[in-house]
Length: 117
View 1 (cartoon, rainbow, N blue to C red):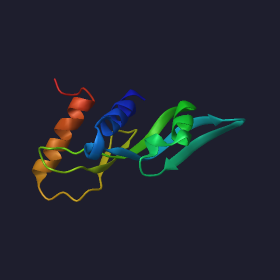
View 2: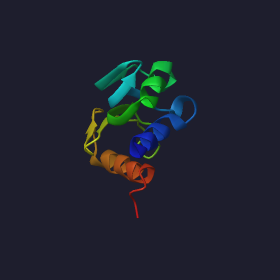
View 3: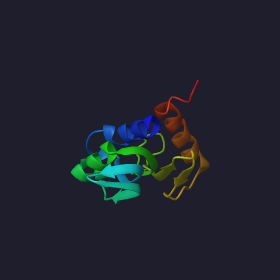
């Protein structure tokens, strides 16, 4: 849960035009009212602003995936749309024109997830 929380905080932490946002979240083991559901997905641009997102997140035991748009990354002059899955995989949806962009994104992710030593 902590890694997804860190990614969410990074994406939504910047101010103004530089900010990223959560586009979609898939949760597992959720209890909503009297119902226990195996999986629930919520989707909308700037999802983090929606009360239903916070409600489902609070009532779920784990994340399955998080799709977000990163904050603007100055080193490459771009932001990236990515999906992070619970198994550790990352899907980059934004077309990449130079491998330097991927390297800079990975460096940022290492920092956000405290993976760099």
